[in-house]
Length: 217
Length: 217
DNA sequence: CTGCATCCGCCTCGATACTG
DNA sequence: CAGTATCGAGGCGGATGCAG
Image (cartoon, rainbow over all chains, first blue to last red; front, side, top):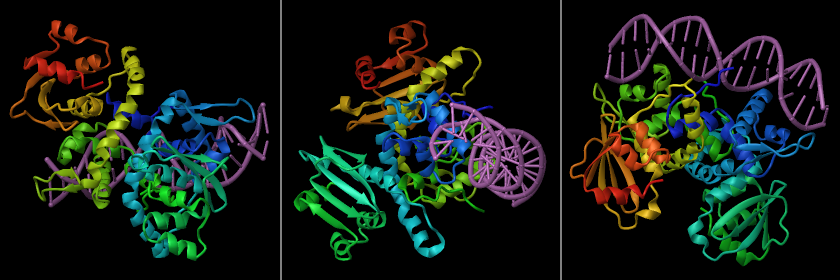
């Protein structure tokens, strides 16, 4: 009954009252890659209770962070303008979180761990890794297929936006998997090595790819 | 024994595993205004259990976000470089949280609520409200005293940093209280009205104050 | 079949008491 | 002052049930 609140006259406390609860920011992560149905959100949140997701969605809608599009069977949740404002903050938090993924990857290689992984999370990781300052005048569309999941990056006006599904006219298409992408991003594998091992395939304008590749870190 | 983790190969999940737990980001908020002793942190976190603060500090230290300076009686916690990286993110989150403080203020005016308030939180709120783009060439120090608590803002190089204690050579000194400051920031009270009601006092270079006042929103 | 509501065991949290 | 120990209450996680 009683929502647990910090009860502090502080904007940070207000923010944490809403998105600081367990799972909530990861729900927002799901919505940042496009509108999602209830069940689709569940898939991205292994371990969450169905009642908890329901509760969280209620408070997100109630506070104008998310909204329901359809009414009946085809209903889906999407972010409001206020919710969308969390995108850049989330990008920075993802960049900050990278301080720790090497440690976690180490834990993983210790063999005691099987972290779940989803291509949609890489969409946001790529948005976060995009360095806007390097992209002056660059305008291109790159389509990615990770472990069978396809999306594309739209790069223009010094911004990068990842969108689910295939692109209409991609300049270049890349096929690989999450692990390889992360290894390349973490400089543990070179692009060339990945291609040799047939872990990564590039189709389309290769020069565009090389240019775009430089825009991420 | 078992830390509750999302167990996801996602940098956002890594971040939330660390600072997404209850109270943790507010602990960081405390450290963002300077090193703090254990008891000082407790004061800023009404309702937290002492064991919980202890646990949180352990994980923050363990993951290189905070560190202990002294050993015995005079020990204090401060942020590491990794922890300090949360400053700008926290600023943005504070700005985002302002979407909701009007609603909460409304709840407050409904009379059913007494939100706790601390001047140190206003320090960060001011840092967050600072608009770097407006501050080209501005270099000044403004000392604030809110309800008896004194700190000062150092503005230079398009940045604003709030520091506890009195300033050495402040250009202007302001004396007021949190509520008045927030009302002025929220445009509910004008500067002139506040001065007339003797809720706010300005000493020193008034033109500097007027200039600096424009840098915040 | 999707979108939840209900129920229950468990673990975290919050408060108090206690120790170096 | 800086934590540790303990314990009741409640949010969380998982399974199940039900309605549109």
